[in-house]
Image (cartoon, rainbow, N blue to C red; front, top):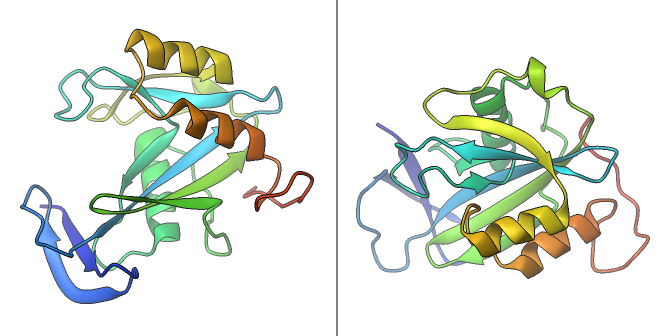
Length: 179
């Protein structure tokens, strides 16, 4: 049973917990996170979801993602999900999300990892991930168009590829990445 903390509209924990699959109460929000892995060629590692998943079965998605479980921080969730889904161990303790997007029922934190990873050395979570590959911005946008990738806004894909080497809203605002 997966449990999630409930947050208010200002992302403050309410002290309530909900079970995955339960109906959302009014003014109740949860948190999810994604880790987007980019290599030195400017490509993003993407994963294909298993065909038996209830949401977005068989579609390609960002590197990893998931709900932040009750009692976890976004950083702890990023560490856990990265290891569970791909077998990669990284410390996110001193990291913060690259950006956050508000959605209908919560908050979605996006972390970036810049690293050349050998896909053959990954351990894919059989219950979640069918396949992985490196893909460039235009390839991902074409996959969104042909229905093989989760239908993210293409402007979000553009933003991720344009901002991978910095933070903030300005060009040339350097940052460091999780190593």
